[in-house]
Image 1 (cartoon, helix red, strand yellow):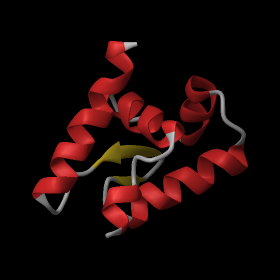
Image 2 (cartoon, one colour; image 1 turned 90 degrees about the horizontal axis):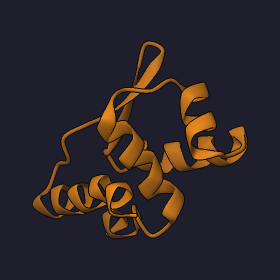
Image 3 (cartoon, helix red, strand yellow; image 1 turned 90 degrees about the vertical axis):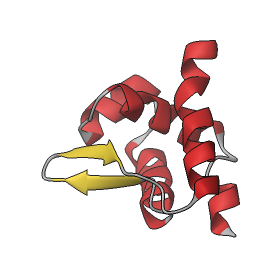
Length: 84
Protein backbone atom coordinates (compact mmCIF):
# COMPACT_ATOMS: atom_id res chain seq x y z
CA UNK A 1 0.00 0.00 0.00
CA UNK A 2 2.78 2.47 -0.86
CA UNK A 3 0.16 4.50 -2.69
CA UNK A 4 -1.34 5.61 0.63
CA UNK A 5 1.95 7.20 1.72
CA UNK A 6 2.45 9.04 -1.57
CA UNK A 7 1.04 12.27 -0.20
CA UNK A 8 1.97 12.08 3.47
CA UNK A 9 4.61 14.78 3.03
CA UNK A 10 3.53 18.34 2.22
CA UNK A 11 6.36 18.72 -0.27
CA UNK A 12 5.02 15.90 -2.44
CA UNK A 13 1.60 17.54 -2.36
CA UNK A 14 3.22 20.81 -3.45
CA UNK A 15 5.02 19.09 -6.35
CA UNK A 16 1.77 17.58 -7.61
CA UNK A 17 -0.06 20.89 -7.22
CA UNK A 18 2.61 22.65 -9.29
CA UNK A 19 2.60 19.96 -11.96
CA UNK A 20 -1.18 20.16 -12.10
CA UNK A 21 -0.75 23.68 -13.54
CA UNK A 22 1.65 22.65 -16.32
CA UNK A 23 4.74 20.54 -16.97
CA UNK A 24 7.88 21.75 -15.22
CA UNK A 25 11.62 21.24 -15.49
CA UNK A 26 13.58 20.12 -12.47
CA UNK A 27 14.99 23.64 -12.05
CA UNK A 28 11.52 25.20 -12.25
CA UNK A 29 10.26 22.83 -9.58
CA UNK A 30 13.26 23.59 -7.41
CA UNK A 31 12.56 27.33 -7.56
CA UNK A 32 8.78 27.08 -7.23
CA UNK A 33 8.87 24.66 -4.30
CA UNK A 34 11.91 26.20 -2.59
CA UNK A 35 13.51 22.77 -2.16
CA UNK A 36 17.12 21.74 -2.40
CA UNK A 37 18.00 19.56 -5.37
CA UNK A 38 18.53 16.55 -3.08
CA UNK A 39 15.14 16.92 -1.38
CA UNK A 40 13.32 17.50 -4.66
CA UNK A 41 15.03 14.51 -6.27
CA UNK A 42 14.01 12.27 -3.36
CA UNK A 43 10.35 13.35 -3.48
CA UNK A 44 10.18 13.11 -7.27
CA UNK A 45 11.56 9.57 -7.17
CA UNK A 46 8.87 8.53 -4.67
CA UNK A 47 6.12 10.02 -6.84
CA UNK A 48 7.59 8.41 -9.98
CA UNK A 49 7.88 5.01 -8.31
CA UNK A 50 4.23 5.18 -7.28
CA UNK A 51 3.15 6.20 -10.78
CA UNK A 52 1.98 9.77 -10.18
CA UNK A 53 4.55 11.64 -12.27
CA UNK A 54 6.96 10.86 -15.07
CA UNK A 55 10.01 12.45 -16.62
CA UNK A 56 9.63 13.29 -20.31
CA UNK A 57 12.65 14.69 -22.15
CA UNK A 58 13.46 17.80 -20.10
CA UNK A 59 10.35 18.11 -17.93
CA UNK A 60 8.11 16.33 -15.44
CA UNK A 61 4.39 15.78 -15.83
CA UNK A 62 1.52 14.15 -14.00
CA UNK A 63 0.46 10.69 -15.13
CA UNK A 64 -2.95 9.09 -14.77
CA UNK A 65 -2.98 7.00 -11.57
CA UNK A 66 -3.38 3.26 -11.97
CA UNK A 67 -6.12 2.93 -9.35
CA UNK A 68 -9.26 4.69 -8.18
CA UNK A 69 -7.62 5.45 -4.83
CA UNK A 70 -4.63 6.94 -6.62
CA UNK A 71 -6.93 9.13 -8.69
CA UNK A 72 -8.70 10.48 -5.60
CA UNK A 73 -5.41 11.13 -3.78
CA UNK A 74 -3.97 12.95 -6.79
CA UNK A 75 -7.10 15.11 -7.18
CA UNK A 76 -6.91 16.14 -3.53
CA UNK A 77 -3.19 16.90 -3.76
CA UNK A 78 -3.60 18.85 -7.01
CA UNK A 79 -6.22 21.11 -5.41
CA UNK A 80 -4.36 21.61 -2.14
CA UNK A 81 -2.37 24.64 -3.20
CA UNK A 82 -5.41 26.55 -4.46
CA UNK A 83 -7.06 26.21 -1.05
CA UNK A 84 -4.23 27.92 0.85
